[in-house]
Length: 188
Image (cartoon, rainbow, N blue to C red; front, side, top):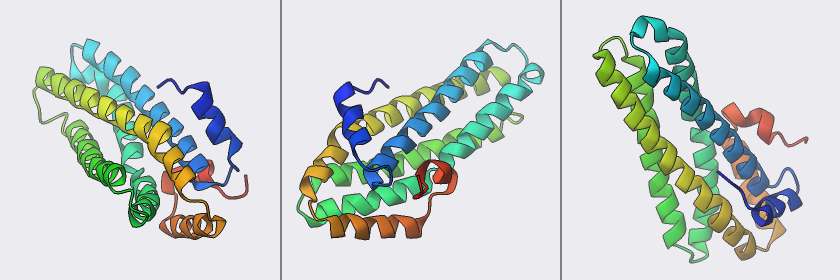
């Protein structure tokens, strides 16, 4: 995903511990995971025999587990969306929350498919992995782009009270950061 210089500078101007800056850095990490999955999927599609693909399958499994670890990220974003809804910005946050549910289903489907590689015909497995990867990638890419470029800047313009940002940050801290702890730590 190409991030425009204006958008990137918006997030870089925020304090490093601002929840929007953290979300943005987490999005970059999610995209790195998706890039690893893209590379592994590309290699997988060239494999003639499953016996030769065990390292690639392991890589896809690790990446899909990391994507599943993003559930706390989604929950923390929903803290922001609930505040937007409370301020009468309803449509975009509700769409994002519905997309969170759909993305979580797709992540689980991809993970479960990778785990079943020994139970599925090899060519069917590769086709299924490719279809699921492409679906997940494009839906996730579109979702992150909307959040980075539209929703989060809109929230920043909408919510002016530092106390409200602090309250939401505390709520996010209570949810936790799991996979993203190194990205999200408050002492940066």
